[in-house]
Image 1 (cartoon, rainbow, N blue to C red):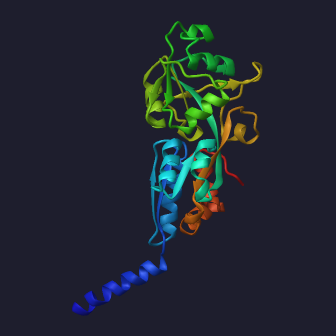
Image 2 (image 1 turned 180 degrees about the horizontal axis):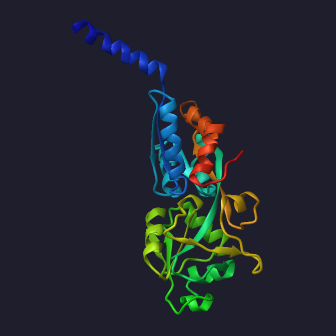
Image 3 (image 1 turned 180 degrees about the vertical axis):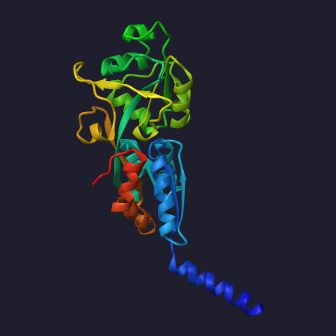
Length: 271
């Protein structure tokens, strides 16, 4: 027994030497969260001794953590802002596209509205339209849900769908994408927006048109052929000094097996 105990520290040292830098923290975008969770689970099974911790909170939260040095990898559903790039300049940032997403507009399944134009969406989320009868629905108050301002999806929606106009003060901010799904599923007059991977039978996606003529539903197929007008890249962002530490995990995510997970979760692979 004593001999076994004496050998234990040496075994631990050998294990640490064989598996250096495998305690990785991944933080940020709720959109990327379900994908990173699945990637981490598979990577840890394939890599004895590896530890990958994945935490959501929003792209802005992940970027702040990267600036502060409290995460190894930032998950982001938007590009870096100029002020963020300046703060990260000395870190020799690496930005890798790991997949693509279609931003789905969702309503309650009881809502008879099946399609909306970009202009109608802008008016709903800026507060110019407040009743579903104004856009072809029932006489029902619109209850709009949004992510918090730290979310990359919040930023993407504002820039690409709302023509950079501000959200109405009546729009309800939710701390996570899952909370939007739950709220819309329980409220007849609700509308919200989520990443493609969050679609399920408790909510209904609506077809979107940017030209007022062609309405397209969000799906992997329509995002791939670019017929769906609201799609975006998903990123991993990390400091150059962390590259040796995170390379194995990032390479796995970009590998054939890793990219299979991208489409299994409900996003579009980069290959």
